[in-house]
Length: 122
Length: 354
Image (cartoon, rainbow over all chains, first blue to last red; front, top):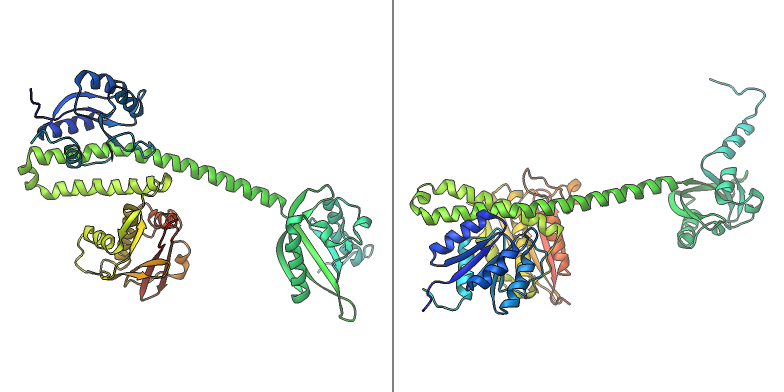
C-alpha cells in the first residue's frame, strides 16, 4: 500500500507544545501516529509505529532526549530525528537530523521536516 | 590652649608617639641603609631594633617587590616624595605582607639631604578583607548566572506555546485573525521581544561556540538593515564596497543590529546612521556612526559594563555581549564620540581567524 501522508511521533514534556505541533502538522497533511511526554515512550513508540520521523525534546524528567536518541538509533541508524530544545548544552548536531531551538514557529518546523523527507507526499 | 605638663617634655611625647605608632617607621640614608626604626617596625619585621640598624631596605622586601622598591627608591631620589606606594615587606620568617609606603626627605641642620623618613602602613587586613569581598562577589555572580540561565531556559517552553498557539489560530481561523490583526501583532511582537531578551541572557551566561564561515560583509549589513522595523525619521547610509571575511554570521548580525538599534535610540528616533566598511591590510573595520548627541565623559568608561544601561527596558547586556562576540573573533570593539556631533562604534576584525 502506497503511503502518502508522512507519519510522525512527537515527544515533549510540555503537553501544550505536543498538542500545537501535532494539530498543525495534521492540518498540513501529516499523520501523527504517536505522542509522548518522556524519553522512555519515544523508543517504544518508535519501534511500535515505525514513523517516518520523530520530533523530540531534550530536557525531560527521568528519561531525557539523549536516552531516546540512543535507543531509537539502536533500532534504526537512519531514523529521522528532529530535536526541539531550549537548551544549548547538548552537543548532538552530529547525532540527529536537525536541531531546532525554542521558541520556534510551526511553519519553520514543518518546512524543515518536509525538506528532509523523501517526496512521497504532496 | 593646653600646655604640656612640666614633668614631661615634648621630646618624650614625640618619642612615645614614634615608638607606639601602629604604623611602621624607618629612617634611611642615601644608600638605602636603615639608620633608625620604631618598635612597631622591629616587631612586624621580626628582628630586634639593633639587628635592623645597618640592614638595607632591600633586605626587608620579598622577591616580587624587589623591582618595585628599586623604582620607588629611585623615584624618591629624583623627586623627594613618595606617597602610598604598595609593596610587600618580608618578615624574618619569610612571610610577606602588604604595606603602603610613603617617604619624604630628611635634611640636616644645613639643609643638606641625608636620607628619608619612611612610613609604612600595614594593609594586610585590608587586603584580606578585599579578597574576601571579591570572592563573595564572584560567587554571587556565578549564582546569578546560573539562576538567569535556568529562568531563561524555563521560559522558552511557555514562549513556544504562545507563539505556536498564535500561529495555529491564524491557520484555523484566518478571517478572525485578519480582522483583529493589530491585536495579534502586539502579542506576537511581545513574544519576540521576550525571546530576544532571553537569548541575550543565555548567550551571555552560556555562550555557544562560533560557527565560522566566509561571508560578504556588505550582504550581512544589508540583511541586518532590511530586517529592522522601518523608522520614518531615520536615514541609514549603507556601504557600497565589500570585503569578504570569516565570521559567525548570526553572531555578527546580533552585534550589528544591537549597535544600530543603540544608534537609533541615541538619536531619539530621528537622524542619520552611516555604516562603513573600511578595508585594511590585515583587518577590516565596520563603522556604525550616528548623528546623536555623543556620549558624555562620565559614561564613557561604563558603557561596556554588564547591566549598565540608560534605557528603561532591556537587559543591559547588549554592549558587553557585543564586545564578547567581537573579541571571540579576535577582534576589537571600540568607539569615538564627540558631544553634540555623535558617536562612531568601530568593529575591527582580523582578516583570517587562526
